[in-house]
Image (cartoon, rainbow, N blue to C red; front, side):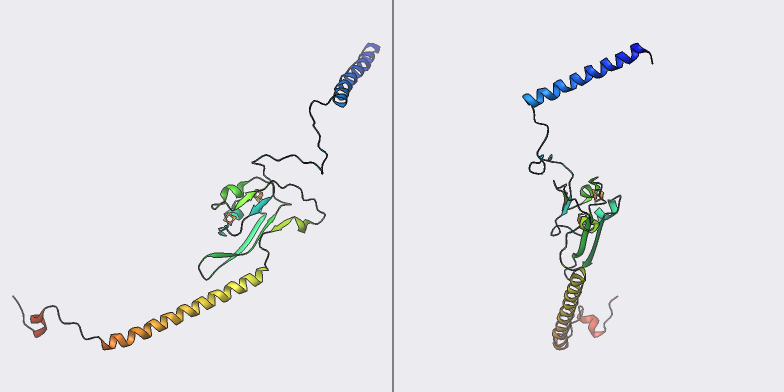
Length: 193
Ligand code: SF4
Ligand code: SF4
């Protein structure tokens, strides 16, 4: 490197530093626009369609498993059992937000729109287990046992009702007279050409 080039580099460094400091000084003396927030006391308002943590309204969810099938990183897991009224009952529904990449495919696929993104994005943790969101708070084994009991009770009631209706039909059938023949001549054995 020649002396001229060396001096040019020094001059360029001085000029760019002065330019940068002029902008800094202008903001320091008279800030036209605030570009920083005093986080965590202050926070940006997230945009309306921001894809934050997921929330599933389990009262609306039909356990169709579309979200599970469509998720490219397998971070949704659920189990459901069929209830006495033939509707599915969720035993558990979990989303691992430590693995989720917030692509929104599951929300798009949800046919009843029970699954939605929220504006939430802060959940620092040193325990990965805390990054699994549980949407069913009752114990899965208890739910399955309760549903199995209800199904058995409903089946027993249905069987009782069926037996009672058969018992009611049997004496009525015994008492009812034989139906008269449609053609009285046919009943007498007459034959028509
Ligand atoms: S947002 Fe994407 S990665 Fe996250 S659970 Fe839904 S489908 Fe999976
Ligand atoms: S796609 Fe929607 S309705 Fe179906 S299991 Fe997922 S959250 Fe529930």
